[in-house]
Length: 419
Image (tube, rainbow, N blue to C red; front, side):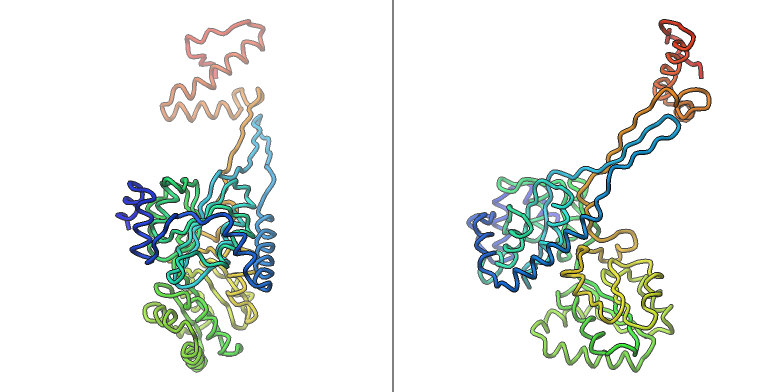
């Protein structure tokens, strides 16, 4: 993976074309998708799909607008502080491809960035192996979201291009979006060169905590729904009723056998599929918190109360009518969530991932004097041996003292040490 990043950094577009041919089996004439293709894709998709995308876009925008806060002003001890946020200039959104098209991820990444006020949003997505093009549904979502730059590049090489820039793709300030293990590791590698939004957004995970009050078919399909993304993820069923657990497993077997994505689901289950029989609901939460899953579904009695006790999860879905699929598409919060245990210390993608916090500090004369905050600053600076830091306060104090007694000027040769 590091070799891929280094190759992209050194060779630019040439590396992108070569790596896309090697890994995706597609020979690109250009890495950029023509802008006209976005509008053409939007015109080509079924009306029902367009309406669903528009509904999702509007709900995502509505939710993320609520995260925007007004500047905060605070005055204390002669110090006035104004805190506000400014968006970064340019964001790169990564959208997975290959096994499936993910127009929802376009909306879940680009819309929060644009709501935050980001001026430029570039999109990288792997080309379809069969057609050699970016899927129409993905391009249509880009058009609806307001993205104009789309690049037919995926994998670690896309992350390298967004981080370092190439002849065609200008470097960005922040990269966001989920991907496979190679994409997630590549984002970790370039962190520091660019900002990496949210946490380790890797292969999908779900933990379903369920009991016999819920139809086993519902628990079964919800264990499966994240597993169908493919390998390297996690799919857990946790219950304190062994008979119920066996019934859910029977339903899982039946659904998987009939699924068109049997291979992807089986690949997930082979390494990351688990049935955990525990002693109690409390024990189930201990297991879940240890996993810190991307998605946690509580399908059992007292689910609402249990939700308040969860410490580690990317998103929590409460009750049998709240499948993670609603969160993946239309609930409103971004479906870009922490995986691989990173929910222990991080959260879903939000507008804050695209913004910088600034504060403006104004100090007036009332902050000075033997009991003022300025005096405390000078004492702390002196304790750290930073003389100029202390003198920056003491010189001002000397000027204030001189003006108070009518002295026209202050001799600072003694360091102004009057505090």
